[in-house]
Amino acid sequence: MIKLVDFFLKLCQVRERQEKVIVRNSEVTLKRFADHAFQEALFSFLWAREKGIDPEKLIKMVLVATIYKSFPEEKEWKKLISCLPSENKEEFALLKKQFLEQRTKISKLAKEIILIEKIISLKKSQAEDYYKENLRKLQEDDLKRVAKGLLLLKDSKASPKNNFEKIAKFLIRTARLQTFERRGWVLRGIKDAETVAQHTFHFMISSWVLGNKKGFNDFKTISLALVHDLCEVYAGDKVPYLEDSSGSITKEIFKKPPRVPRNKKIEWLMKKKQKEWQGIKKITEILPPKIAREIRNLWIEFEERLTKEGRFIYLLDKVENLFQATNYWLKDKSFPIVAWWIYLKEMLDDPLLLKVIAALDKKFQHRLLKLNGPDS
Amino acid sequence: MAAETKYYLTKEGFEKLSQEFEKLKEQKKIIMEEEAPDMADLHSPDAEYLTFQEDLGFVERRLEEIEAILKNCEILKPPPKHKRHIVHLGATVEVEIDGQKDEFTIVAPVEADPMAGKISHESPVGKALLGRSIGERVVVQSSIRAEYKIRKITYKSIK
Image (cartoon, rainbow over all chains, first blue to last red):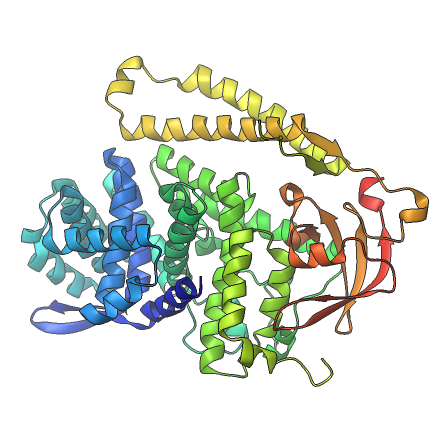
């Protein structure tokens, strides 16, 4: 289990690595790999549903391609995936191979999807040049229509006219999550904090790997993670029991878990649910109805913990925060991490997730013990 | 044959699940009547049918899950008066942690909603509190030490 914890901690580094593309012979720095991976996975999901193909392999391929692009040195890549359970290790290696060699229809499609998604990040004139330069690499006609839709609808209020343009408009709107820094980290004083998209990328991988260990369907767990924060495009990111208007907050308040009376907890939770439900309805209303309904159902399954998978992924989301918190704490010893540990001992009841945090505890035991006060 | 899992529910949890079960049965009827695909679609599944299948599949799975819970559940009752100073499943426990007050209701995993103050009896804190009584200090084991002093125990959620 400690090796797996090493994998998840190392994966936090993907968010720090940036992507570059060539436009008109000059190098342009794009957003970070993890931000793009979120949009590429979302695009893959929508595309597969629109075309009636299997989305699972397509999404997995873009996720593995992102990890590979972030760790391109063979030694680094091998070291990273050696931390995975054997079944995941083999699958990751195979997906990487297929992606690089462009052996399958899905691997070619993944490459095209990754290419198109970049258009969202580029400035309008750069995006147009990039599209023209890469046009010959796009084999799929309908994908060209999405790319054209992205160019047409970018920075414009025009309404989409067909399903391909609807997908393009949805991608433009959800691209906000690539720059949307998570409020909890910002309030804790983190500069250049993890974005919602970066969190979702990491969460998709942990849902895949740990969900697989639980015997769940990979596509189900990855999809639950993929859609879980889409509501935040309109609803914003909520920090437990804090009002959105709470402006003057110091990071001191995060030294202890939030303790508020039960009626306040329920009131806060109801408001959050209401706002997020409106958010998920609004963000999906632009999509073709059947895809919109599927995303809303997945979101409800996660949010209301309606299934075994929904409950597990909901709790894993909390563990995800501990991974990122640990990442910040390793860089800055004043980062308030104690509250996360206390909170998770109240929150988690899944044996596998308890094993994961026990392994994290063991790994940093000496350092964590020092955080207890002198009276402990 | 393996023993069936027993689900312990508060009365409120039981009612909530029963209502959801009835609503889902209605929903299933609506899906079956209004959106059943042509048989031809079964042989050439397009995106619409795949999504439809997910919806119906989801409703059916959820119905099965709730049915299993309702069939094998026991509604929690408060313990006899002389045992109410001890934390049992269903108890609402007022605690003091590092100078702060909080309140948890200890429930089965199926009803747990920690953000709303309902914690699972299988969580480390839930486990540690069970069987303890008013005035006791409960320490949850891990590198980060957390001590919960039990101030009050009530059974208001299962009366």
